[in-house]
Image (cartoon, rainbow, N blue to C red):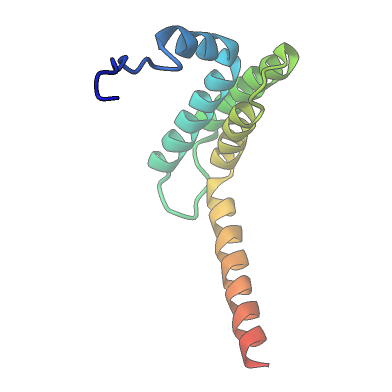
Amino acid sequence: MADREVSPLTPVAGAGARRRWIRAHAAGLVALMVGLSSFVAGAIGQPRLMAAPDWHVTVPCLIAAALATAVSLVRRESSIALPLVGLGLAAVAAVLGWFLVVAIIVAATAAVIVILHQVM
């Protein structure tokens, strides 16, 4: 039993499978990268926290993310979350100040609801 020869482990998904996955989801990855870069650029370029970001930066990125999402949907890429998250990030970047205000109000309302639920 100890004389058995142990074969080395082989990877299930090698570099070829990774390249095929990237090629199959290229438009979704582009949408995600454009949305992420739009969000970062909008957050960094804001003069104040609650101010609207520069629309000269965020709107073209939103359009590019929407086009990449449309291409991804037309190509019927299997991972639908990639382009939708990218489009969502680009859309939030366009209205980041207002989004933060609404997010704070929703979080405060949820906290009040939880507190009142525990008390009553």
